[in-house]
Image (tube, rainbow, N blue to C red):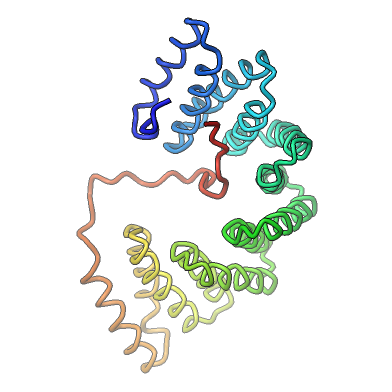
Length: 287
């Protein structure tokens, strides 16, 4: 397959996958269906992705290609999470986890466990989700995958936010923030700071909320995530008269510098998709 496949039109890749299947080249067809599924995932076309992963999985099963089955089954589970097909996602990811473990693929097993945490959370099984999150954290830790560890801890914190357990949420998100800082993941730092700002705001600490939002905006700017940087800056600005004068002067200077530095807003930009964040999980890409 072309190394530039990720830059291709999904419809074009899908056409090539079907052509390979018709020509009897099952191996290429399976790989291409899996690849185009990931392309659709990247643009939040989850129904199309689901169909492509199913087609890929069917071929891999016919070929008895266990590696292909594992990878594609995991991807299918991620698509099901995005489609909020919780029961199906749990069943699919349990099967993927078992196969990854059988083939001693520790990284794949960790990803599947993480997926099971997210699916269980979506299903409403909070305690089960927390158990899976902790297992995923340990698994990523043993692999020295700090990015995975940070993402898991961050999701645990967000889950506590949803339960309005502010104390546990704050403690957990600060742990994620520490890891994000250690690995210099500025977008992760920004997400953690933004959520800490939400918590501070809810608890009535407007000074802390403003400080968190401004620092989050700085990190979003450095990550070139300009639209969210603007949103967080606006939230900080709304608090300027609710904070001490010294804090206001200090933050006002940073806010003005960021506003001047931000590029002009692209009015053609569509609103972002509010569905599940597919970046939380790394797709298994069958080469």
